[in-house]
Length: 288
Length: 282
Figure (cartoon, rainbow over the protein chains, first blue to last red):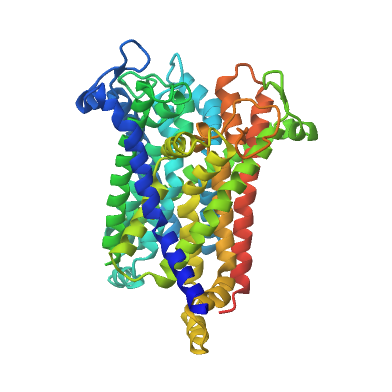
């Protein structure tokens, strides 16, 4: 009797262990199931490279190039801001800050990670957007730049905490060796610690970028949502995620528009999958 | 020598500056929301339904809706996540399957939140015909927070010393008995921390509930899990962007309530972790 109970429980545990794989596959399958239908009306090439996104005109034009470029522009801007600042902050926390300040800083950054995206979007709308509008003398502050700045903040907690982990896990002897040879602390950090932690830092950057590409509410609220090919970082853009979030409410289930939004979901899923696998490989290499 | 120390000072100064650049805005955001949101908070704001096209009245249905959703998500995610964590920490061998599970967890954590929304719409709303409902939203959020629960629970289980298990097994207890009576009780604080972090995450997410549960305006509470509900994050989005001329006070008030809810949960998780470390018996 007890053996049977034990057997059932162990199988149940195995089942839950496999559940994550099951869910990832399930997500992908359901995106495919709903999204592939769009390719009956538009070829994959025209879908990815078409310059016009007019999903409800007659006939519908379903080119997501402006959305891809919008996402890339915002992500690129966010990466330029968040990567140097994030890595610098990680170095400060891991190597320089006194223990008490270190704990306070870590909690502060955890706090930033916990603020809901919609709250950051709202704060961006009332503070950052008017500021961008005034500084650059624009008709509207809802631009790719505003989105990049806000998203940089959302990527920061990921970058800082993972890069800090990477630096922390480098054996102490590396640094001690450098110091014993007469290097200053900074030289030891710059020439020894950072190169040694490079694959972990790369993973941190990748995961931060993944967070930015997938971010939805804040970008939808502050980037202006214009589905045109962006001409500059000071123009309104529309991202892949924001398009889904803004339009799915109005799309009729089973319509071309509905299928197209799921196809955008497939694109996003593949991008995030690629980023996560790469980051995981980078992290794995470090451990070996 | 002198020169290299000057370089060091300059470098350290910039590193410090970078840190300030992150920490100061976080502080500012929180201070601004508290300062401008606090005047809006009153018993009436917290306990009344929205009135005059959401320009006045309260946010009670949104608060309750959020609590329903979060509880629904945890009822689903905790058992599955905990058992998955037990599998990974107690049973899994270092083989391809384990590697794939770990990769799947990393990917679940990385899937964009709006894609969870699409998935919830396709699977729960349309395929299972649950409709746009509390049930669909809870299940979607549940799958989304699964990686957080698995990762933190696994850490908690793995931090229980091996000798505890060995002693129990040597006394003739079975593997499951050992896990059930020795490992789990010792890991509870860590599991609790992860669960609360998951709750906080679920409470703040908007994109996954957009098409699976959120109602634009619903002046009453949902009567069953098959009905739509209002939720705080979606409500904040709606009054910030969709409804014109909402008093700024109402928006800041809503943001403050949402932020308080989420940060309180995080604070609770931190306190539990701290207490646990202090009382650690090994």
